[in-house]
Amino acid sequence: MKIPNLTKTLAIALSCILLPSSAQPHSPQQQQPPSTETSNDDIELRRKVAQHDGAFSSGVNHYYEELLGDHNFTIHARSLEATILSVDDVGRFCVGLASNPNRVQIFQDQTSCDRDDWKTLFVFSAYKKKDYSLSRRPICVGHNNDPDRSMIFAGRSECAVEEWNTAFSFFEFGGDLDQSTEDSRSFESMVVWEALEPHRMMIYPHYGGEKNGWREASSLTYKSRWRPATYAEAKMLVPHLATHSLLHKRTDIHPPYDPATFRCAQALIVLWNYSQVSSSTPRSLRGDIDPQFNIDSRRHGFTHLSSMAYLRIHENKYDHVAAVDVVVDGLVRASASIPYNTNLLVSGVQLALEESLRTGRPVPVIPHKDHERGDFLIGMIDEAIVVFGGSVVFRL
Image (cartoon, rainbow, N blue to C red; front, side, top):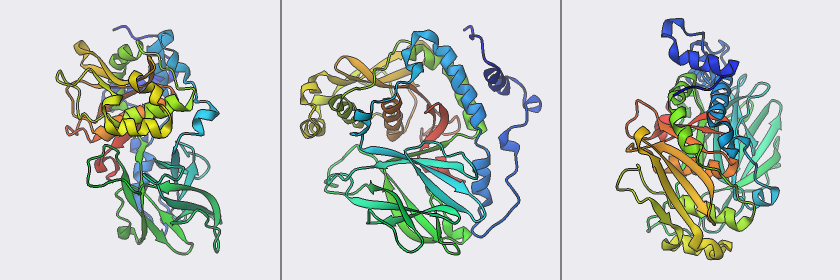
């Protein structure tokens, strides 16, 4: 395949793959974290953050846009209108890490928090609104600016107490959902760790805070999470992008411009429940054959769209890649491309589709080459290379 003319940034990105390791330029993976040590310091965590490379990730994104060219309108990622965003129950929260002392701050409605002294640790999504079926317990995020840091207060929507001011609140998973029945909605949880002098917290999925002097304060249940890819992880995605672009060139994503269509697309994504796409996977899955989908359609007012809503699989068998499309009212609302006959975590594919719906961009997804179980996925979200999946993604 002929590779299109590349930008300077792209040329550098590709050279990192084509050159032998001895000739590769100095990468963030080789950088050493600062030598400054503080109370509750964690060298392994800081080393992981130091390996993130936003410049390389941006170069890969530019390369993918060049591959898509003018054949796909989604390269101009159309943001959802304010009226649609107002009905989106799910918010994205960026967790930034800073040192001296080690602490975190949560940034609302953001997927990157690389600024000033902060480096993006990970991003999680959670419900912004109370829902008696899914999200009943309020979580207040307090802020203190001496030094800047966040603290989580469970079970309350206001937290202007002692040294803290209320920054914002959200709701964690938990409600009247019948736990005796199988439900394809997936959720994650993590421990909230705290330390004193000054009072501060640490959150990171599957983190063992007790090893570094943190004490367990509470726990938090949320919807999904991802973190920025390291330099080595981002490199793995690049050789696959040309193949994925062949499918994405044929798909024009039309973001929903009314609340009913948006809710319908959200309900469809929950129905994806296949660990891999193969010759035995149905080519389409109608929403109205699922009882929960019909309940959601009445609850959220999209019954008039139910008969025109389905998940569709189309593939390029020669290159062993398939695309999962979310189709409502005859138009594709979200799309993720995945390898054919390859194990992939179900919740990971759902996450890719959710972010495609939010951003109006197709999301290419591949498994990490060393994880055949498909629980370590690499993809492109918000013009950045990220990793998501099971606990192995956050292992230090």
